[in-house]
Length: 85
Image (tube, rainbow, N blue to C red; front, side, top):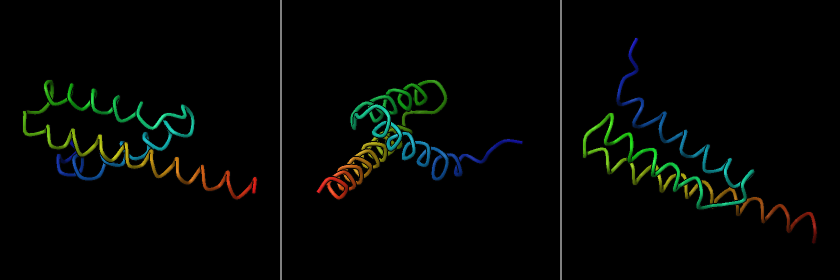
């Protein structure tokens, strides 16, 4: 059974990007590492699996990973301030 492309583009890939962006901040303490990694992986997928119109999605997934990393970092900083002060 083949997964529908729309489900991959609109649900699966964005969720993976968001989750990995947050996990990278939790474990690696870097907001920039996972968006760079996701950008490289999605660009590679664009050349191997998809066509050049997938570039828009590469940018969107990278921005989602960066945004979720920033949100996670802000939540961690806010919780650290509340526990110490």
